[in-house]
Length: 362
Image (cartoon, rainbow, N blue to C red):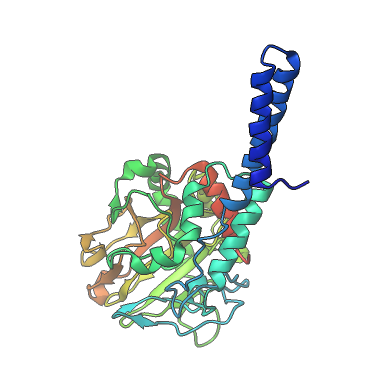
């Protein structure tokens, strides 16, 4: 049975008059309680139907490569199962897509916006709207956030409002996981040596099995993924059991959505990773230095930092950032173990919702 606002108001007014007429009677009290219950049900139903994602939702295409982003999965070799656009796409002089298999490098207009809208609705129906204020706000106003952010910080896919922002974060932001990674330095370095010096994957290839080459204007940038955009690479994980075990012990590792990655990352001498933005501000990217020649640098939001062997750097890669290795061949490669951790100010309920919304392949 549907109740109009005018009908409910008339009932409340009539009920209150009845209460005044027979205030001392038990009948009047019962009528009051009944009408208050009816009014409460009406208000709850009205708020549930109108507040979450009804009206005001923006369907403007986001600035994701060519405008949007499809969440695509990868096969066992790390190849994308979607339609990629160009490997490097220039916007305002900055390279946005570093890899054609990245989910943010596909061109689907406002498809991602609609997916987020429906996924958040589905999550709330299954679970709760409690604690979803910022996520709802981010989804509703995504188009505006992604196009109006300052040039220094402009996530390409999803911006969660009201998170503290800074290019670099103190190691205390995720102290447990930073200390665990640093204690694991010898094991991770040994495992890197093992996979890096393996035979080439095939005849004529310079890359060992499991490694992939990323687009750079100078030099070489190679990555060996254990988890790529939320999808485990089983063959690679089997070859790195100690690294995989470390990932399982991290408390804030993003393991269940497309914003989560874990890999060994190598820059050869002369390599440059051009300026670009990451997909979201809900994560902090952690680099554990494994091999760090002296002429290597990471610049985030205009602030330069140098890696250090055995130590972690925490940074928000939704800020404009680049990396380079200006050393010579005698210096050898720069090597880091990279993992994506949750931003410390993303609440547990928000993490659960974002895992659901950004499940790989959704």
